Amino acid sequence: MTVSRAFWKIVLKNIGTVITYTIVLLLFGTMNVSSGSTTTQYEAEKPNIVVFNHDEERGVTKHFIDYLGKNADIVTGYEDNDRLKDALFYSQVNLVIDIPENFHQDIALGYNPEIKLRSSTDYASELAKVQVRRYLSVAETYAAMHLSEDELVNKIDGAMKTETKIEVKSTVDTAKFSKAYRYYSFANYSILCCVIMIVCLIMASFNRIEVRRRNLVSSIELGKMNRILLRNSCIYSALVWLFYVAISVVVLGTDVMFTGQGLLFALNAFVFSACATTIAILVSRFISKTTVVNGVMLVISIGSSFLCGAFVPAEYMPDAVLAFAHALPSYYYIYGNEQIRDIENFEFNSLAPILLNMAIVLAFSVAFVIVANIVSKRRQKIA
Image (cartoon, rainbow, N blue to C red; front, side):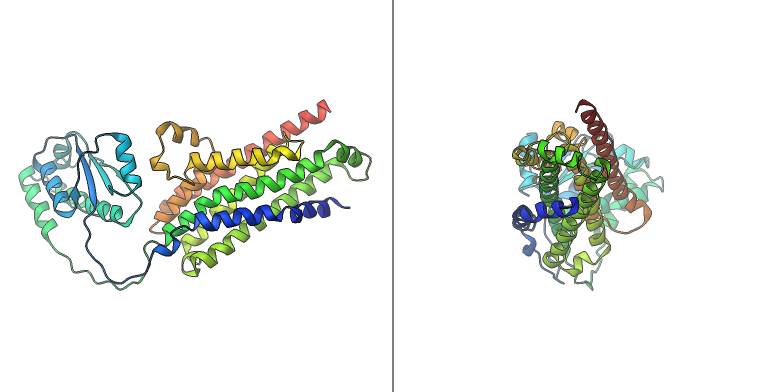
């Protein structure tokens, strides 16, 4: 039996693994996918916001808070950080606004101070952020005219009272890319499970002592056999990726996947699938028994998915957990999905952060291959 035939025979024998984790992806990765709907009607909604003011409540700062109070419901009682995170997670609070010290003075002087925003993941949070950005944009425009603070407040107030007639001409579902984000972020778990499980099983099967002895007396060289295994592992991972992309087209629709964002989601998943292959190859260098493959796979896939935001959004994670997550490729894959979801245009400045995250995932892949080769050579010397 050739190496390739043996490889694919093991794949077919364990095809149930792929089916199982595909079902898991469909159940959880597409949760609430059908909840969004396309509409041409707009209904005003007041989001719930929390305002932490570290400045004096005077001048522009007072006017800004008054403006927020007219356009949103300012809620209190969330001074406890844990309670605030829970409120954001359950969308009881849509936006948290931290006004920095000397805000009113810095605005008047044209320094454009940065306001820290923390948001939930629903539509109301986006509406609140638009309101904040609109106010700051107007304030920065008039601040450039070097007005007194009272004059600046009057100018901003006049601009904010100006009503604009909005005519909706598009029927785009504003939530559709959030659905794709959920699907592809949860795919972090399914891709790792399917790739690590199958590739490690195959490698462990070829690493069994009786198989290794048989291969040593066969006509095929060890290096050639390893190249064949690597090539087939890459083909298998590409097929898993293609399978999940095809499912996303069916579940999410062509109006999502046949767009620039949809192609970026698919490309990001392809890069991560390649990285998952290198992780599997590295792990297989330490495994010689097929009985331990399932345990190792679950630790890696579930661990990285929890830590990096596949199951729980990263903004609700403790800072210490996120600091550790930066050492895992899954973090950059999921963060890349978040950036793809929020991209507004396809200029280089918008694409650069997404491409950077993909490059980091590829760098992880190269590092895993190098370490796997070092481990393999050392094990050969010991043998």
